[in-house]
Image (cartoon, rainbow, N blue to C red; front, side):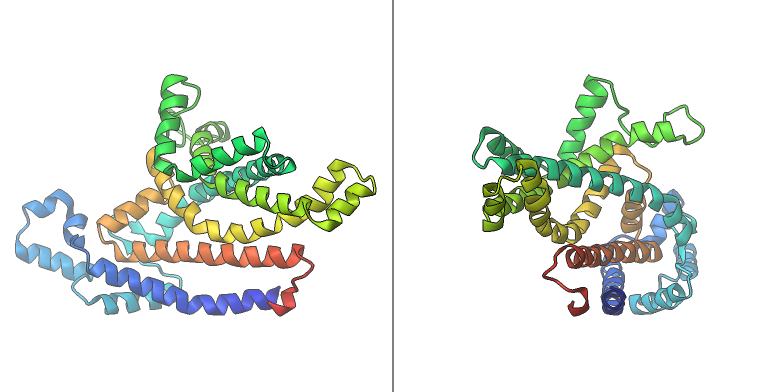
Amino acid sequence: MARLAGRRALSAVPVVLVVTFGVFAVAAASPFDPVKAYAGTAALGADRETLDRLRDNLGVDQSFVVRWWNWLTDAVTGDLGHSGVMRQPVAQVIAERLVWSALLCAVAFAVAVLVGTLLGVLAARRPGSVLDRAVTSLAYSLEAAPVFWIALLAVWLFALQWDVLPAGGLTDTASERVTAGQVASHIVLPAGVLAVSQLPWFTLYVRQGVADALAEDPVRGARARGIGEGTVLLGHALRSGLLPVLTLIGSRVPELITGALLVESVFSWPGIAAATVEAATAVDFPLLAALTTLATAAVLVGNLLADLLYGLFDPRVKLSEM
């Protein structure tokens, strides 16, 4: 396990280098002016000399290669730079927002896996039944629905029509401090919407995997020996049917991150979405590079986790050979 993790860590280095270099290259080609974004409305009345001096202070007059190399060498020592648009160190911007994004993604992912497994197993028990057709139809419908549309529909239904859940934010409007109760009530809608956006893939994968496992000879033999249906389903078919889902975990991480950005924007969730949008529109090189590196690392860790789980649960796969 340690050997596999070490090899993946080494292979991640060139990936991060290429990704961060691409971020600086794309940002440099952007039509947005970071100086005007930094100065705001004050840039409208500023003369050319003042803007040039500000450009020199921010370091944006250098080529993007120089800016990338300076950021990279500083990042290795732990200095991620200073965000011009947020007026804060990049490390502080991420630290203040990452915990809420991580909480949202963790809750949504757990709900999607649990509910998707349950629905997939129920549908696979009797292929072609009314329940099976209903579950698969719902899964395909949700798979085609954009996550922002689901979010807006949830706000309209649960917050505006029924008034049972808050429409957005982390706490109530008049609250001066963050409490666990308020966070629990405010996370229901965004986490639920994000979970629904991930639900179809887990449901369909589990349904197909369990249905295939139930048709295998060992399962038929277990049924012929009089073993109970619950034991056959949970002890044999489910374990075999969940193996494809393990590989799905890593591949869903990029979609989860993208969905989280949209959900956070709709529900005003104080995660990294707002910081990502502002960094992109203001061409905030240090913050853009740090957030992109963070997303890249999340994808790589997700793929590693999927491989480790597959090696642990599939007796045909040995971690030492991966």
